[in-house]
Structure formats: C-alpha cells, structure tokens
Image 1 (cartoon, rainbow, N blue to C red):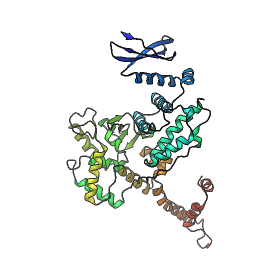
Image 2: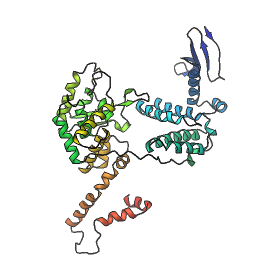
Image 3: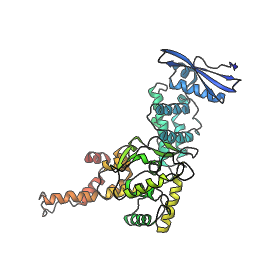
Image 4: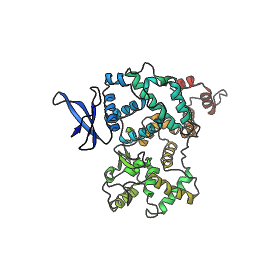
Length: 418
C-alpha cells in the first residue's frame, strides 16, 4: 500500500510506498499519441533523490510558477544546462563526465546552492581567485565557462536582470602550465629504434606508442580502437570513440572521441602497416576480448593510461631521455608534420582539433620557428623573378619584416596579418 504523503503544488508530488520501501515521484508528461498529459511515476531510494528529480524536471520544463515560488539554485541550473545538452546530443558521454568533474569542484563554492539572483560578482570572483591557488589555468578556464554558461542561460531566459559574470575576471593560476614537450629528432630516432629492436613480448604497448608517434592519435583513441575500425584494403583507420576515466576512476568506453572533430578517418602510413597487422593478430588471441579491441589487457576490460605512461618512462630511463607522458608522442608527431611543411588546416584535420586556431595555439612555438623559412622562400622567389634589384642598398633584410611585425601594436598587427 502507498502512504500518500504528498508534496508539491501542481508541479508533481512524492510519497512513500510502504510495500516497496521506496519513494515515488509522480508527475505529468505529455503523450503525443494520446494528445494529452498522462501520469508518470519514478521510484527512488530516498526522499531527497525524488525531490531533486522533480526539481530538475520543473527547471527543464521552465515552469514559471515553480521558478517564481522557489527560485533557481545555481548548481541546479548548471546540472539542468548540462543535462539539456546531453539529451539534445550536443555533447558526448565523455564530455558530460568531464564537465561533471568540474561541477564537483564548483559545488564547493559557499554560494553554489543559493538562488542565482542572490549571487554577487564579488563572490564568484573570490571563489575563482581561491581556486587559482591550487588549480591549473586549464581548470580555472573550465570553472569560469560553467559559471558563464549558467548565468548567460539565466539572463537570456529572464530569470535574472543582470549577468554577474560581466564583472568577473578570470584569474591566472599561480601554478605553472605544464609544457608538453616534443622529442627532438635525435631522441625520436633513438626511441623508434629501441621500439623496433624489441618485440611486443618485451613492450606490450609498443605498437600503441608507434601509432601515436606516426599518426598523432590521442592515447585514449588508440586504446579504444577495435578490429572493425581498421580498413587494411584502403589503408585507413576510423577514429570514432575514446576511453575516458570517470570521477571515481572507472575506465569506460565513450561512444565518441574527445570532440566532434575527433571523428575522423586517418590514412595508415606504409611503414606502420605491418605493426597494425601484427596487433590485429595479437588481439585475436586475447581472452574475453568481446569488443575486439586492438589493445585489450588480459584481465581487465580496458587499459589504463597510467600503465602506458609507466611503460613509456621505463624506456626513456634506458635511453637517458627526460620523462614525459604519452601525450608528448602525439605532440612529437605534430611537430614533425609542421617541420615537414604541412599546412595548419591539414594538421588540424589529422589531429582532430575543433578549429584551426586550436592547432595554431597549441603549436605556436613550432610554427614561429619555421616562419623565417617561409619568408626565405618568398625572398628567393622575388630574386628568381628579378622583382628586386639586389644592388638596391635600401631594401629590407629578411629579418626586418619580422621585427616590424613584432613591434606593431596588436590592432595594427591583426590588420597586417589579415
């Protein structure tokens, strides 16, 4: 029998069922086929969970009466905004989990569960300033983005009359940004030769390292590959998912890469093809490999990136190369591609970046290094076409255009580059 301990004002109700020892949330939902609202029920282990469900339901439906009477706590709005994106397929499960990790930090803010209209810019600023003492610039940016999205949504919906984020400045972390170092050509040569001199029995993830180094994969993308992603007939690999770590440390398979642009088809270099074929053969003999993964550990479902980093740094120790993570293998690939003259737009597609600006920003120092080489090509062309009189003493030297650009103010520089 149900114990009708109702709560709610036409926005749904909850009650406890003695026979099932569960809390029930009851609400109305529009049925397209019947063209009317029908009663729906959902059970929960606790009253708090049932109340939270109804609250989120009313926020998603933008129930004006509910919002007027109850207000909108900031954290609930953030969760609603995130759920809306997930339900609309605007973000993947992996992206959802990454945002949730940020929200789990944000909810420590003393004002996070207060109504949005009562939160002042000074409180947000103070929280971000405090976070800048322990978190990286990347994390601070993510926190700021979540505040910004929540308040922008609330402002656009008319829930607040002024967006407090207008007065908030994103602070700079006191922690130094981690440099992702690319290997030098000599280091890469030593590293590749070492891998080729050893079998997969010696280095179980040898072929994963080679694929990162020669194709620019993210490590999670490599570890998510299965035999169906490999098209040997056309020498292609389909990148369409990744391994990701949840907040509790669990490794799961995401149904998409890190970003939408991460969905891409990559050509297999001829030099790498024998190693991919080898890995396909190895994967067939791994027990319980129901997902046909290329890199399936013998006991657990999925490989841990920490395991690969440990294996990588063991090799670097032997080669007397400074330690780095597997991400540096991807960074090394991009660096060699730029050195070989690959255009930023092509590299963007191969790397799975959302925008070419991401590529340019990530590898600014490498592009700058070869800027002078490109200027030299222009200079040689002018000379070959006899467009410049070599005897003219007033001609600019090769270095001078660079110096002029570097000395321009930002506004003039942007105009010049366009």
